[in-house]
Length: 208
Image (cartoon, rainbow, N blue to C red; front, side):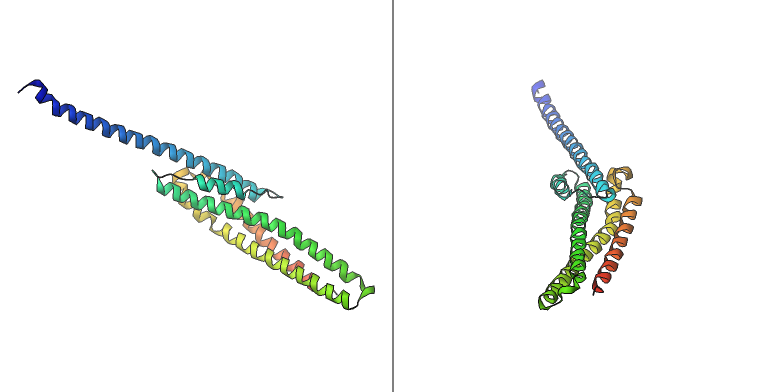
């Protein structure tokens, strides 16, 4: 038996092993790259969510958060991707609701002011005045109803945000997520806004 005959199988096995090691090495590198990418998106999402929860005048960040969601893919680590997607979805919906609440709050205030001004103009109380009063009152009711829907939805989102964070925390660490105290304070303020909206609506209903 020649040396070539003896070594040929060994060489073939070595080639297969090397190819296997090369493939698994490539997979490992690819997995780390995907993990780093998703973690960077999580960090960016957290920064944007902090802005939403802490700002007095909320910037509309729903669109960039939606972009983060579309990019949060990690086929080599699907559990991380799933947890990140849940967190980013929560952040996106919080941002969307918060921006809508700001808009509706201003709209409801304008509707109440228009109604109060109309009701104060007692010298022209006729059929036209009454019809306008009914329309203005309906606008106030509608605006406050829509505002209440958004506030209640935001309250629920803030209530469930810690669940999304708890799922993601083992992959990214607690520091990469929004502080529990910040989300709790935002929820408390949301509930206070709901009470204020209810009180303002009641006062508007009693305008004569």
